[in-house]
Length: 527
Image (cartoon, rainbow, N blue to C red):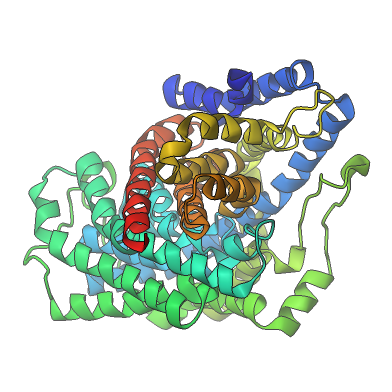
């Protein structure tokens, strides 16, 4: 039965990663197999299967709406010339693509994660990297790998507040788990800038010495980020870690670049440009740099206000609520879509206001929106079938065979044989949940209770095991299929999801392993 339960994990790896099928074909096959095996082996009733399919279709809509907002923003910025001006701004700060990787993918993406989540960061940063001259494949992989360390805290702490709600709702315990996350990540997460630059060089550039020359700077920046995260969790609270850490580190990065501290004399400009050639430098733009950045800054401000200012949050979540509860009468099968609260709405509003500020006209809006909608067809299908597989998998506890759900069956099977080394395995279980569900929060909701139970039975500190679950789930963002589908669509790489998965799988597994080792060391230190 373990192989039946694992079909939702094994099939995408084989079909996308091994056979290089597109997400549309590979995930359609995977969804059909999971539905059929769920019906015959798990004895999931046709009504539950139908409810799960309806839930999946509804859950796809908010993600597609975020994708629409991100694409609308990107294309409006292209229409006004703001993207070229942003490019010039980065070039004036540093033409070195290694530094741009850290600035855009890791720090700006981390800030977007801290105020938004929902897979939004990679959809925002990948197009920016392409505008700087990165190839689409490099941009997608770097954006996905970077959206890992900040995702453990997500949008103002949502993975802890919601993800751990089945285990505890005590603020003191949640703050302690948040502190444990930063302790685990103090040296592992600190490696992320260096890893991103290494990925850029090894897969898209020619010389390893280009990495060694910037390695001291990358390690210092990574440690600054991790230290700020730890201090934020300790002194302020877990809700603002993923906002304070990237913002504070961004200031330090700009200072180090201006002072040329720990940086090599030469800039690495051309080796990784699109098609191996230097990107053409656009003509100087008359647009003010602040005006060019205004829509993105507006996104950050609106997202932060909507998540932190309680009256605003209450209004946005109360009206235009398109959520669907108790689908076909099942209280466990629900789908949330608070339209006004969605990052997609905020991205669209910022794009429209940006047009008014930058072009003083809304004339480009309708043709831009129309072209964006036409470009999303294949993505909608791929995302839909992926979520159908995911929802059947997660709802499989509603069966007539008295079996636990498929994810719980897998978790209990693993725990039976690996309880002795569970601190090493805990992040892999979190990563497994995020790989299938596409969410740090949902992975933690699914597995937090079993993680806590195993920790209690094995006399391990629950806070460390739950922290490892969250960091592992965050690392799962690198390999999550529907994140890959969405980001690929933004940059025009639909159909190449398998190639992307093969590239992100190694850093994802490596991250989980290092967190497991860090957890083992932390347990020894606190014993």
